[in-house]
Image (cartoon, rainbow, N blue to C red; front, top):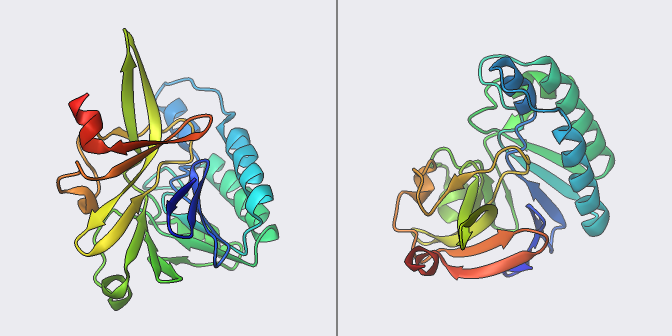
Length: 238
């Protein structure tokens, strides 16, 4: 489904058609190990699911450039065994399936550069392509590229909405599209199946980009397909 001119939603990812650029956000590799250390026993099959999803998307769009838009790893202060293993495996796979791989730093990626260096790569604060500014979204940039851009893509928030039918409540990951000052803003959900996300109808907002009235933002829910649900204020009223 097209979310903006020349930009398609592909499952939980975005694809910029003109430059054949695929954007993946908030993978949070190592999350299962972090939960296990807290005594929460979740099985470690998420990486397999993530790789299957990524492979399916790549086979469909055949990207030239792939951007990992922040929070590639989950732990803050150290690198877990799972993070070392899974991130290097992901980087190796993506490098084989594109001409350029870009690693954008998120707030969980203070030391991801150590892992990237094992593959002679660096992490960056942002990346611009076709006039589209891609950044994680945990802070408002101040560089000239940001100020001159017309469209910004962020992650960080992990947007989701809870929909109620009778007594049943289901939480769905979603994309948001709205405005930040004079710029079009697209907010991506997390690719990790364990990170359900922030219910933007009732939970506290994380990204400074979204510290505004979100009622006019359009909602695109991802389930077995992508569904355009209109404006957020309409869901709020329901």
